[in-house]
Image (cartoon, rainbow, N blue to C red; front, side):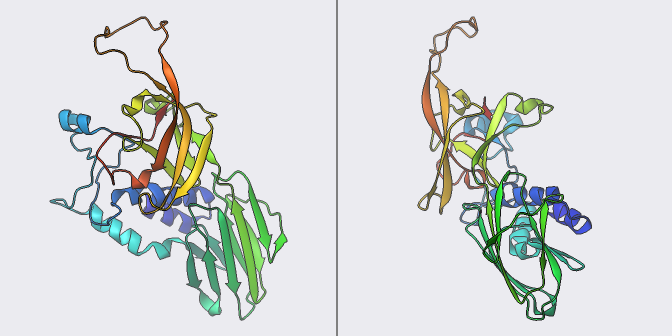
Length: 305
């Protein structure tokens, strides 16, 4: 998907393609490798349970801990290739237009001595800073992507607050000075997401996202079973960065309701009008890419609404 999205960007400057590329880089692709860089997934499930994977032949391929290697290991090599070449996924050049569509700190050099330095603490912070050195005062356009997850943004050019229209997912800045600074501030609020109601498996479920990062609940942080938690579409969420957890990650805590389990002696089927006792809890969530790096246990991205 990352390869495909990049090729689509080469054909047409459309923010949607860069949004897909970003989501894959920070979530789908990255989750295939453990934090130690030595263990890998072939299957990236959005729900996992060690008991189900062990006891259900139909789910035996869904690992809940990454394997150290495979008999036929083509995906780990592809993933290593992607990570090693991620510098080629940051900009797309089309004539006199340079598209900056991925927010990863870098120092890039283009034709005519043009240099662009991007600094940030993305994806944990939405403050993106550019310094452009243009010694020959070449005239060009810099297109900066405004992600679909950032409903609002603030822009400063050389320290001056500026408003520009979003054209197919990008804002375009005319650059011809020897040096230019650009500061972009993106909306990093936690959002409760839902899938299209045409996706039957996700019907009545919600997921949590902050910036480009999709979050997952793990049994390592929350009492199982994870199926007993319910999250409202307007649930209150709290974010903080924990530098000691999982090599440093942003953690989200979402207000949830947890149903208390029926007695093991209760009937299998009961009248649905009978009240079910529940309690208010905080559901702790970590970035999906970092799941399965601790104790083996359940994991869920899509939560009951």
